[in-house]
Image (cartoon, rainbow, N blue to C red):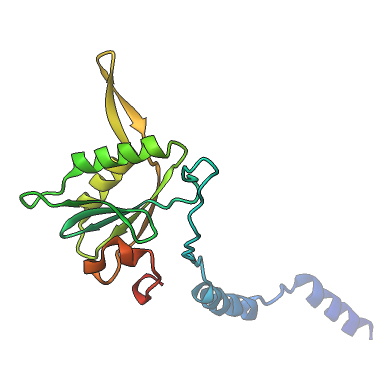
Length: 181
């Protein structure tokens, strides 16, 4: 009996646990969990709230939604409620970035507290056009004592798809449709 106990004790002291089944489980489990994991889901809900006029008749900057529609025909600056503020057609096949910047400067003068703008892009707009439009609505350069200083216009830029019906322009952008959902 002592011999059996001694052998069992020696086996218990010298044997190592068998981790092979555990390693097999980890080899299968880790990739399955990684493949089934969802990293992020970004959801955007478009809300068109009514315009807010203050008592003195001016517009509340938080209630106004400035939209710039960019498509093959040019730019259309709208108010987010279906009204076109200014349409800027392409001139000789080129987008009119300086005039867009002037329109944004006029809007900034009317709404100095407003910081955001929505760019609605058609599917055929290239990346360089997007960058140039963003530069035009974000800031403009002013000469101050011989050096150029960037003045902030609308630095908070949101991107979206242009409405499916370009004939309606920004008017369709204010209404929900299947293309924007």
